[in-house]
Length: 386
Image (cartoon, rainbow, N blue to C red; front, side):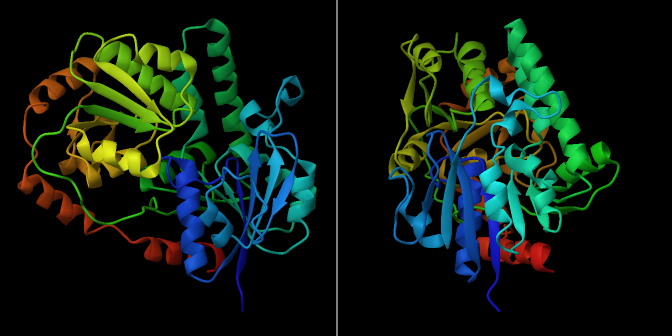
């Protein structure tokens, strides 16, 4: 019997940008390889709603392979402006509320997977009462907005992020009785259990595009930070590195990622030893990782190594993150600093220190224990279909 699933993503899945969109892309690819039909429902900021099937009629900026691995793709507009204001739903979720999406989901009996908190409020729709719904939370939204509140200087922005954090927690609690959860780690599961005082929560490790180490020995040319620069938290982390680590450390520092804000571009080019490379192609991004001497990937929100740090471990030389990832099985693969000054000290120690074959062998042993995407897809299927 052919199995099918509806997957809802707040952004178009993309293989080239570390983060949630990348995880969705690799999950869809794994399901396709397993013979499971994926009906993707996603959002874009254009005003018109369009549908794409295997004939290729979709936004040309979409990765062409996405058309091959999805049975169908339907996109909807992101709601913008004051009309999204609500006393019960955070703006981050209200912008994805869409009656047509609910109607489309009601047309079939396939299980529903919601990627992230953004579109999850649709689980409360009465039209979907009899549907089996899972929400995969790769990032705990209240903690995410709490971080933004902490790092924001403008009083109104602080109030906005505080409101988003409070409403996000209320929304997650509200839909807890309606959905089942999928999180990437045991620590994430514990966080949700503490918030919900229970809940049906499964763990599924992060997907990945390779299980090999291609790091090069010797010396690289610069320090590198990469990520989804369109994301507010990633943006603030990049700003923190520029203003607290490399403001008085004259080591070459490169930031790369998609759609950086003009303010970040200006800040990155204020000093002669720092720069930013916007919207690199996949080969360009990999080349930058391979040529770097140090990969910097602070993790202020997630409990363990994120996708960007794991890419650095597999393709780069020395890696540095913060101490919140203590206890990770990947810990032997990176250095840890708990503050900006600690980051500076480690950078000074490592920048002229050649990366060795011994370190590569250590990484190979640890990466060998990773589950393949095929195994993770099988685990996912067991969660959904038992």
